[in-house]
Image (tube, rainbow, N blue to C red):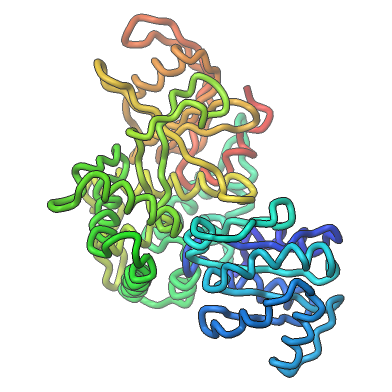
Length: 456
């Protein structure tokens, strides 16, 4: 299955000044497959080490001499390693975190050998490391679950992807393209973007098999809780993960996680799940200016899962010979799914270097209710994003927010075909506000930077 990140990995490999690259992300998002595929496409010999499967491999990295390391590996693996024609892959490197510090020597003394590493619980090792990280000598690439565009490609829907991906404000999208994209996105909303689950869906197996695999992946994530040893009780981690699904689209209240879970425990558990990349926290921002992270409040935050499949497994969304129709789902669940899928698509709107984009929202404090579901920074501007699970809904909070922040561009996400309109109206407080509103279906949110390019 083609992944959007492949072009960035190709560019990294072709760069003679490349740094060792560390792929970060939750388990099962495809990190190992991406590196293997990269070596195969480039015609390079893959030298793959897995430190979780064979912890003894780290003994070969006791020296700071990369040529000596390669010599030892050649003897141990019974292979000739040509730095000009090979790719060294250090998988599950969190199990040998001290090896991270050795990567600088490959960058400085053996630059012709591309070195890639991957780790699923890498953040724990980075937080606990007792060594000096080689700043400026290692690059990071965050790997997300597959997005809707990748899902369409997996199903050989290139023509449909080209049609919707080309839409820009001021153009019309054909009714046929909108109808087909809506139908495919409804299925993506049930399947999610974990590559193994997508593969099952592409193979034509019944939806019940998709749901069973989602449950198996959730069980594997829960089994990983044992690796958080010394940090948090697994029952508390499980309670907080369940609470993420229950609170989707709403402020995450640590005190309401569950009986017997103290507030500080819930906060710590949420942070650990975020470090494991199972959860992303959506921070409150006052959004008075850029950067959005300059005005955050730790007491205000939402939380979303890494993938909608985790949510279906947690909530027990039914699936048998067919997935449930969108209209048959409870209205509250439709809202939760919309919020989760919006977060997933927005996490795909930049290069993924480092940790990927931060997600923000805004909520009025005290007095009148008001909330903006997501706030992003695109093209040097603040872009509020209003979510609707259907085709209609009030936008009172958005109107007032646009007036108070003096912004000229906003996005509304609903089930209608994409559109653009220039609004002039009065807020509930009687203020006149003028701004441009770009309407996009949820299936186009991944392409928002391109859609908004050049608009003001």
